[in-house]
Image 1 (cartoon, rainbow, N blue to C red):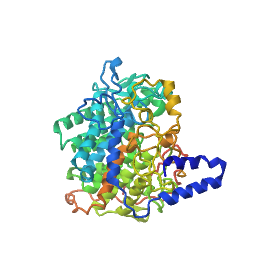
Image 2: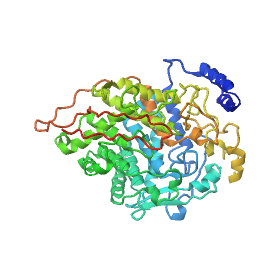
Image 3: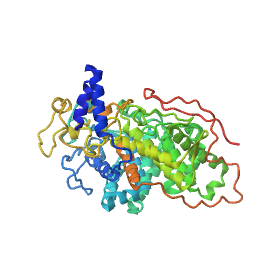
Amino acid sequence: MRLGRMIICRQERWRGATLLLICLLLIGTRHVRPVGAAVDYGGALAKAILFFEGQRSGQLAGAAIPTTISWRGDSGLSDGTAQGVDLRGGYYEGGSNVKAGLPGAFAATMLAWSLVDFARHVDAAGGATQLAAARNALRWAADYLLKTHTAANELWAQVGDPVTDGACWQRPEDMSTSRTAYRINATRPGSDLAAETAAALAASYLAFKPVDATYASTLLSHAQQLFIFADAYRGKYSDSVPFARLRFPSTGYYDELAWAAVWLYRATGLKRYLEYLQRNEPAIGGTQQMQTEMSWDQKLPGAQALLARAVLAGLPATIQVDAPLMWVVEGYAGMAEVFVCAHMPANPLRAVYTTPGGLLYVRGSNAQLALSAAFLLVLLADSLAAASRTVDCQGVTVTPSQILALGQSQVDYLLGSNPLAVSFMVGFGSAFPQNVHHRAASIVSFNTDPSPVTCQGGNTTYLQSTSANPNVHVGAIAGGPNATDGFQDSRLLPAFTEPSACANAPAVGLLARLAAGALPPAAPPPPSPPPHAPHHLRPLHLALPHCDCPLLHPDSPQSLQVWLQSYAQ
């Protein structure tokens, strides 16, 4: 049964509730994956990586990194020319033709993280060719981020604007919209964007270090310089780049500063990056603030998960003997456990809304949020299992296997194990979205018909068309269902159908890890701290105060914040 049939059924909703019920029952009985049925995570992984080729900007023909899809061509070849810089390349973040800095850098960080911690699983699932394809996807992003950093205190934040782009439905190859580039610098600061870019380059350094040490060194140098810039000139990038406020406004920058510091610590092992967290803790709140959202705008859960991983693996003795610093580091790690509890069912600290079908839900375009949360859950499950640890959710013990199962359930839902039996990944399964909100995919390929598509011609002929996209954007993960598992396959409803690099980037690591199967075996215990180390450090399993935390309903615009009482003895 094609997805188009499912949508016809749903569009009859207002004509009769009985008809709607019958349609849902038919779909449910024919397509829900049987319990225990195998999921082809390896096949989905290959498609998730291929997605990035369809998002490329710049010169594709003859590029050092080849393309394998036939429906895309060169685009954005004049990007940055008016400003005297070369900003060709990079990715269009979603279905528009704007190259947006903050979500684009976040996607690069998550894709790099996928390769830092799960590269062996990418290799195991698809061999050296697939691992090379994943690295190529990351390099296309990292090369562009290097181009955007044109001076110590200058970073190009965005190319194009959502006003002119939103008024035009044109494929990238012949777009006629504004390609003005916008930057941040010492007088127009953007700590969030500079720090996120630093995090992306530091993570990419770790991903490329085993295969290209010279390139990796360049990435790390830029990351360190960008972190200094982000810290020295404080401010939100969306206050400096007006057009950024229209679609990707930032709510703050302290989380990005913490995120970048932790990545730089992991990349360099330098204690000073953890000491940065210690000095700035009153402002960051990493030891006492829990956010349920991990996204292009909220990075604190990621920083906390990274430090939890480090604590579970065993920190160097030089850090363990520094009691004030350990207080902060273990505080971050403890909040990662609270993040786990907030997402797990049947415990007093549960704080995340779940759809009736089982998808963690925050708001529209939710697939990317569910996948980022699942990524953290699976990473923490592996780290806990390796350390033979569990999580205490205020008296309810949660095991690594349970955490892994929750993360896996999110991926399974988006690949078809849901009430509608729809895969939200284009090209995966027998029923998937046919009308993703994506300019290049929805317009006949430039290579097939190079006749220019005008703004209004594209709006009329392609955007408003109910015909399936002529180009199948394999691997694209649609925005996802609503809070009640409903979905409409309409190009006019981007919250349902717009894909995003912010969804595919964590999906790469998740799919690779799930293809590997069971949890890793427990590692040998780390060496005991030196005899002179203090004994009053807080344990990772915190004695949490009682919290009557309401479930975070999807209509709530704010992430839930759980403020813990001081637990230092």
